[in-house]
Amino acid sequence: MNSYINSVLSDLNAKYGHEKEYIQSVTEVLGSLDKLIESEPKYKKFKILERIVIPERVIMFKVPWIDDKGEIQINIGYRVQFNSAIGPYKGGLRFHPSVNLGILKFLGFEQIFKNSLTTLPLGGAKGGSDFDPKGKSAREVMGFCQNFMRELYRHIGAHVDVPAGDIGVGSREIGYLFGQYKSIVNSYDSVLTGKGINWGGSKIRPEATGYGCVYFASEMLKTRKIDLVGKRVLISGAGNVAQYAAQKAIQLGATVLSLSDSNGSIIDHDGITLEKLEMIKELKNVRRGRIEEYASMVPNVEFHRDCRPWQLIPCDIALPCATQNELDLADAEALVKNGCIAVCEGANMPTTLDATAFFQKNGILFAPGKASNAGGVATSGLEMSQNAIRLNWHSAEVDSRLQSIMVNIHDAARKAAAEFGEPDNYVMGANIAGFRKVADAMIDLGI
Ligand code: NDP
Ligand code: 2IT
Image 1: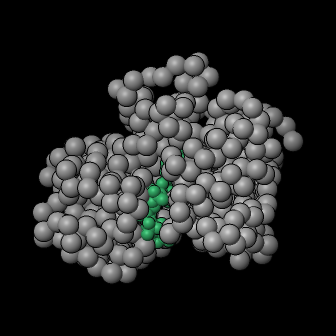
Image 2: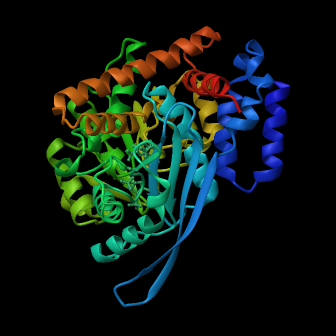
C-alpha cells in the first residue's frame, strides 16, 4: 500500500483502534485509493486523507424519558456530522442497543462517499441512539423520539443537516421526530426525510433502498449478459431494505428463498411470492413480530435459529440487507462453492473485509453498499427537492429518477475502476468516484 495511505491508517489505528467498525470502513476506502493517490499528488499536498477521516463535528447528548411503568430511563443520542464539502449533512438515524460512537463514525464515513455517488448535493452524516425500540409500546417510542429531538433540533436544519431513518427508525419514528421538531421550531422545514406521504414524504422513498439495490444488481449482471429471471436469491434481514429488495427481485422474475432477523433465518423452498411478502410486511411492520412466525404461517418453510442464510441453501445471488459484518469469510466460501455469481450489499458494510477479498479473487460480481444501497439516500435527496419546490411527483417519476441514478452510480463506479485498470472492481471504482468529488471540493473550499 502507498506510504501516505499507510501512515494515515496507522495513526488512525493508534488513536481509534478500539472503534473497530470505523477503522474497518476507513481501511476499505483508503485501501482502494492507492492508484489515485499515486497519480494525483494534490491529495497528499492538501492532507485530504488526514482531513477526510475525521468528522467535522460530533454531537453527543443525554436522552432521558419515562417508560410505561413511570420509571425514568436514560439513553445516549448522537449525531456525527462528518463532511459538508458538497452539501448539507445528510444520513440516517439508527436506534439499536449496539449503537455507539464507533459504529456511527463508520456509518457517517461511508455516507460521505455514498452521497457523493448519488450525484446530488448531499454531505455525509449519521446519528442515532442505543435506545432499543423492540418490545416498547408506541407511547414509549413516541416519548423517546420527542426527548431525542428536544436536543437534536438545534443541530439540524433544511440547509444544515437532514436526518432520515435507518435500523429501528421507520416512518413511525420519523413522524414522532418531525412532530416534535415542528412544535419546537414552529416551522414546516424539510428537516427530515422518509416522511409520511400526507406530510411531505416522497413516493417510492420506503421502497427506494431495496429497489435500488436490485436495480444495481441487474446492471452488474448485464455486464455478463445475465438477467434476474429464474435466479435464486438469498436475502438477509426482514426490515425495510430486505422487504423491498425481495419485492423488486420477485417482480423481475427471481425466486427469493430467504429472509432473516436477529433470531434466525427462514428458508421458503417454494419461493416467497408477492402475496406472501404482504403477510411478511404485516407481520414485521404492523404486528412487529419475529420472522420465525412465517414458518408456521406458510407450508414448506424452515426456520433456522441463530443462523444467517448464506450457508443454508445454494443461490445465484446474495443480497445482505440486515446489518454490518453479517457475511464473513466462511459464508463467502460457502456461497462461492455453491455457485453464487453476484453479491450486492443492501446493508451498510455487511461483508467483512476478508470475505470481500475472497469474492473478488473468485470473480464474483461484488457491489459495495455505498454504491448499491445509495438509492435510499438518493430518494431522500429527491424528497428534499420536492419539498423545496412544494410539489409531489408521481411514483413513476420518482422510480424512473431512482433507476437512472442507480444506472449512473453503476457506470461511474465501473468507469473509475476501468480508468485504474480493474473494470470489475466495484469497491475500488465506487471509492474513487465518490472520493474524488468530495476531495476536490475540500481543496476548492480551502481550510
Ligand atoms: P430495519 O430496522 O427496517 O430492519 C433491520 C433488519 O435487520 C431487521 O430484520 C433486523 O432484525 C435485522 N438486524 C438488525 N440488526 C441486526 C443484528 N445485529 N443481527 C442480525 N440482524 C439484525 O432497518 P433497514 O432495513 O432500514 O436497514 C437494514 C440495513 O440497510 C442497515 O445496514 C442500514 O444501515 C442499511 N440501509 C438502510 C437504508 C434505509 O433507507 N433504510 C438505506 C441504506 C442502507 P431484528 O428485527 O431482529 O432486529
Ligand atoms: O444508510 C443510508 O443511506 C440511510 N440510512 C438513508 C439515509 C438517508 O438520509 O436517506
